[in-house]
Image (cartoon, rainbow, N blue to C red; front, side, top):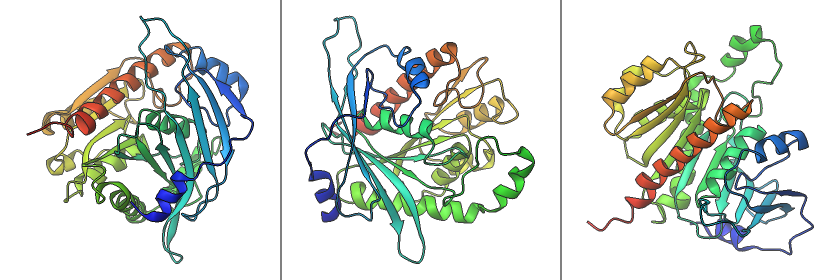
Length: 322
């Protein structure tokens, strides 16, 4: 791991007064109070968490955030999900001539050493729902990198859909693939090449789910150990023959035109160890952007499956003595 990165993580200034208090392992970031209340009510295990902002040197960063979580007493019948200290750092990947922004969320306490690349949906890496999910993954011990796949020009909520095709042409697949590969290389240099992480994980939502499949198909060096693909759009089933690691596909069936379940089933049959989990009556985005209490319950279940999947493949298998 680079000296600059180690220095940034080791830096621990006095914590300012907490800006936000919550009672869960979902580490919330810039959310409206009414949304906070709805999402907090759905969690099965509770924590007292404080979100603070601080400054860290190095890494071309724009800002850094630190989240401290203090466990509160719970009954014996409650699943005690580990609560971590997580640092958040804005950084740039690439050189001065060609670079992209990204956001790294790193578990500081009990870090399992594993890097995870998270590919956003069309709303981009700064979308609060995407960052909430990334925080939660990091809170389970991971180092989560969320790159800006759209170079500062994500699809804006409320934008007329008639403009979508024109917007999409501004993000050619070759450019997006290049940025994903640069982000992968960054994770490799920081974690895998240093011997800290044996394999990387990758997560993708919708647009990012389709890019996840493409990324794993061109992963000739087998840097990734698995992927978790949420309601992927634009999945190319012909790439199944090039996929060498198991993928967990999670989707609803409500918007079958966006993410056809039968297409996911085809992928499942072709990729050893893969699994498809379908939540009937659910649409696109229900896991990281639930709109009702019913969706909240399925979102919690999907996250639990995701957590176990990543642990079993990336962590438990890494610790096996052959």
